[in-house]
Length: 495
Ligand code: SF4
Image (tube, rainbow, N blue to C red; front, side, top):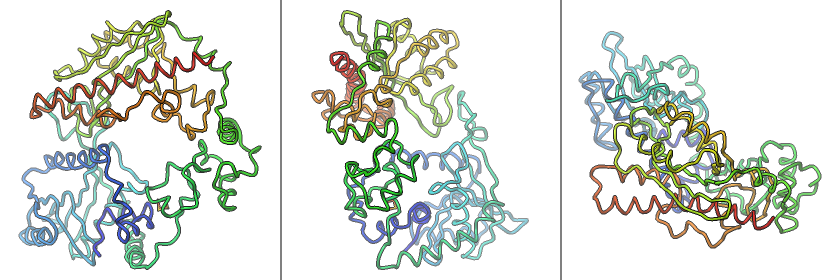
């Protein structure tokens, strides 16, 4: 069985999950990569390709598998100065090194890993030190001398202005000492992994003692006795470890079976009470106070944003969110409603100028701007203010008058057992306003919208497809703000 670097990193995160992937791959058939996950992989490949500009005249190993191993040997034997994707297979361990640089004077190689990230990560499964220690160990098994190891990552302070400047876009960090220190432990893990993967049984699942967000897709396979909605779903249960571990030790998984509910406090207790009663628990006074504080016109507002590892637009850096669209529902005091929207369809040099110009026409900054998780919208406004200082006062006024509709739910003023402990609009909407649904839309998630927008502005996309994407994007964003309107109306009608 071949063990790749991805396998090794998976092992450092959860060896049981790696065992299941190797021995029971059918379990992962349904776990198709989301558009977002595919984009992360594409971003990684793109950063890798762009970083090659830093090493002029390198030779790419563009073959695959055993052929790539043979090609690499050939390039090394003729002392090729720089090799991209050098490939090694030793003792069943298989790696492709992003950049391998031959140092003639020291008769050794510098090994570089390119990461589409703004920093050096040191936590599994994204521990870059272990990643390089694994690669170095495999290359050394083939008899080569590695004299330096480094990570090439994105520079978080770089902003694009005109053509990309590769020496500013990337940072080359020498991590040789850390890799050296980590190598003995990594070699031990490599042997343990090899042995473990030949075991007949995969061993226990440790996530029984972790909150739902930490579980992988095979949790229910490994823990069939745990219901879909369990003590693992209690709001921030990880912060009450003693209580949580005690239930798990006693095999208490259902929220209804918790023997000591009096120990639960605040929102956790509300969540428990709503499950026991089977009904929503509503603090009408608190909701009324919040909603009464809003100033008309109420402006239900939502941005869609695009992000990427390699900055595409002037003024933006790696992974900075680029607002490309908004939807706005405006409600007057008499309840009348109108809709406005804007979508950047043809990016110009000053990408966000037309967007801000329309916002100034559409938004009355004296009224309350309502969003769901306002942090996202207010951060985009701050970025727009940085790019357009003349409009900074207008954007600041919007931010000063923002209200987060999500807080009604995240503060526990309205707690319905059907929310299953979540305050995401995608969980709240089907419970409170079941007739409004994202199900029939071609775009139903923010990351999908981002990926579609990129496709829409791509010059080679046909006009027909561009039009279809434009329609889908407008529909999706409109539903986001209409959903807030409907939830607001639901709450008002209930008071
Ligand atoms: S649920 Fe957790 S411990 Fe179990 S296999 Fe998945 S990641 Fe590993």
